[in-house]
Image (cartoon, rainbow, N blue to C red; front, top):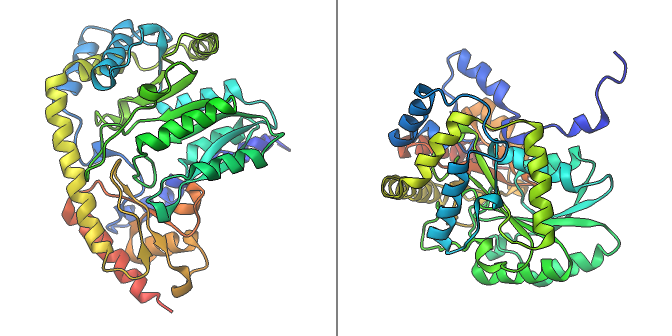
Amino acid sequence: MKDLFSKRSAFAINPIREEDTAAEEMRKSGIDVIKLNTGDPAVYMPTPDYITDAYIDALKHKKTSYSRAEGVPELLDAVAKRYKRLYNVDFGQNSVITTQGLSEAISMIDSALINDGEFAFLFRPYYPAYMTNLRLAGGDAVFGRYYESDNWNTKVEDVKQTLKAAKGKKIKYMMITNPNNPTGTVLTRNVLKELVDIANEHDLLLISDEIYDEIVFNGASFTSLCQIAKGMPHMVLNGISKNFDATGFRVGFMIIPEEDEVSKALRQKFSDYARIRLSSNTPAEYACVEALNNVEQHGIEIKKMVGEIQDRINHASKLLDENPFLNYAKPNGAFYIFPKIDLDRLDFKDDREFVRALLNEEHVQLTRGSGFGEPSHIRIVSLPPKEILGEAVKRVNRFCQKHAK
């Protein structure tokens, strides 16, 4: 059929998984491939029993029908209680909308807010789904930067200058990721305050993706956007995938905590979108109620999980320090390391070629930094046990030595 696919369908790519087919073929042929491309903690740290038991209990009690479009009330209440407990922020059930992971939330945001030719303000490097969904909605991005030389923080004056230069472009929202994927940076409270002021000044909806908000280590502290953006419309995105180690449950949350007219309109519009897809995963929602409300058990599990991630990140970092061809800023959140490749000293033209050759020769699967809007970098997922992670980094180091000019 001629012209079967839309022009926008060309943007439906995920660089994190683009080498999956090749890696799977290698595995089928008996090759030991170490996959460090997907940030899936449940592969290496099984979802805690108290959460999976709650899922099984929901199934046993036949909680398998469509749920309320915005989410079961018990879950919305549990989300609100979590934010009160952790961040001393008050909002009601009506401020929360459940989504099928944050991927659906991001898609909803762009579909609801972006007209053809309009823009979002994103920071490089960004999570790839931000750009993919923005383009699928007919939009584009104005880019700010996180600076590697400043431990992947942003420079507020540069943000102001970028917005000034973009005068005339219709920018609908500003998206931040904190803690950051792919860099592992946790933004400081002062930087967040300044971004709130900028968004307010330029009449931008400020959105913070905080899916890793409890995975913070190496002395960092986390501040939620909702703690400092009081009085202005804003959104916080979160979910069960990372902090609660339940990626396959596909349960996320859109939180719109304010009571101004813009916030009320946003809640109504996203409720409309939730109704289009009927509901998210009902038994998973009930399992998430237990995950959020069992504070004592979660405290035990998250402490153990963060301790293991910190240990693995620091172990991989020490091994990377031996590689003169890779330079990185040490992360203090999430579970990624994002080294820069010294392409001037290696026989590769770009990070894509580096990643593909690494998979073919050393059977380690990483993700190219250009997929996050930051060429000449690679993202290393530091979730496997230290012996597996250490072997992978040793293979990377050996590979670089082999290809030195």
